[in-house]
Image (tube, rainbow, N blue to C red; front, side, top):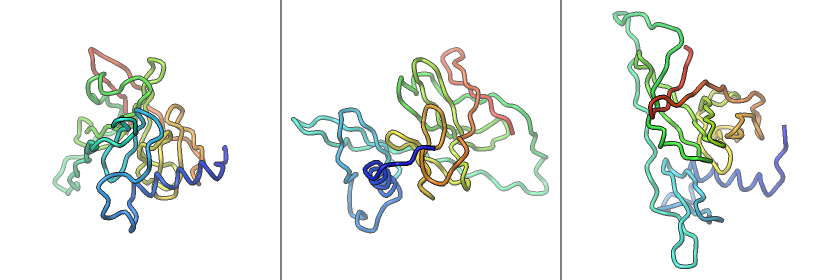
Amino acid sequence: MALLNRKDFLALAGVVLLQIGTPFANAATGPSLKPTKFGQTIIWRNKKYTAIKSGKKLVWNKGVALPKPKPTSTPTPSDPPVEHGTFDIDLGAIEEVVEGQTQIFFPKDPHARSKSFFVTRNNALLIAFDSICTHEGCQVWIGIPLLLCACHLSSFNRFTGVPEGGPALKPLKSYPIREEIGRLIITNTY
């Protein structure tokens, strides 16, 4: 496990603070972190911002709201038993994940159970990971350039799922994924 140097740790901590909010940034309308290169993306307050050019300066665009997972119902004694097994889940169109980018999806399986997945396209290959931290089960989000757990600052490589910092020691769970008739299909086991 690689240790972060001071500069990388401060950058990571800044991104995490921007994602979870700080008492000093409550009145801000956009990220206060300065973009460093064109096309750079950041997640802040449940919006994805992209660095664009405004004249000769780099600035953040207005941001796009991230999809929120829909709450699922709590099973009651009258609900039928939930089946366990392997299910193929349609995540969406293949165009939703462009080369070198990572997207998060919030699908439901055939039994209406919600789960979220990261999908990255790298060198035309698709890679899929669970979005739950292997440290204590918190939600992991897309950071720059890592996948970040805001609970305890664990960070994961978005191409391998391997932890690169923080208390997490195990990689994110990976899933088989394929393209089928223009769709992204992930195989999930419950």
